[in-house]
Image (spheres, rainbow, N blue to C red):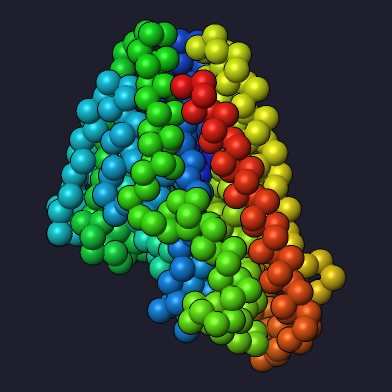
Length: 405
């Protein structure tokens, strides 16, 4: 069975893409544009962006142990992110969880029979078309997809993701992706889009989203997911006395893993580039038009600059002067862009890029990275200074937005 007329594919970030395309399929139209709700608006209303630094050296045997979150509630193991957004639209999400594979699949079938697409929570490395090896570490485990078709006879599940086309995986791979992380509990989410939404209600949802971002920034749930976390990171990059200092934690080629993971989490892991800051700027510009607060549009320029700054920082983590760094960046960008642009037609090219990333990793781990001790220290000192400048820019943007709200 397949949902009739489901033609809503593509996006930038997996969770905002799912919400955007599920709303669009149900015919929801934003009152201020007379178009489906944009991904940027969903990001903003769900709580927006966040600063932060996740450091998990316990996974060093598998990955760099570094992740730059960038988006609110990214590490939640529940349906919190989608629920916060939907509640602000006046929608009550229907969350189904079960420990049994059969019950989980039956729920999908029943939802499709009633004409409802289903948002499913998966383990990222278990989705074959993403080509995400387990060695990349635990931070990449979370992913959501839309199920819009199921064919048990041909052993196929039809999915919508950030790709520009529908994607097909086997029932076995689908079940494995749902059960790999036990805390997901085969989670599936459906909802009935609001038949109408007043401008007043949408403005309220936008303002609540901005206030949520300000609150989460000033009162983080975890110390590391804050500006203070970024400040700690800037210090640790060059502090050889601290046990968590980068040159102590990442000897020789292991530094490459950390720097690669920093680049990936900022640029090519569903952020839209620039650690979601460009998407958030899009949100503020749209919110400015919607609310009539022109000052929001002016603040959006702060976040544009921030997005550019984060991209420059990510690029500097893997300097172009070193071929293995330049090639790694190119492969990461290619793997993401081919999926987004070409969907299933780009999967072979994405798989090839993923294999090349693994080959480059194995090559660099046999060497001292990047150019010996002296130039390694110079690189980390330069990155530390860039990061401190970004922290200042983050604070300035946050202050400018706080004054308006």
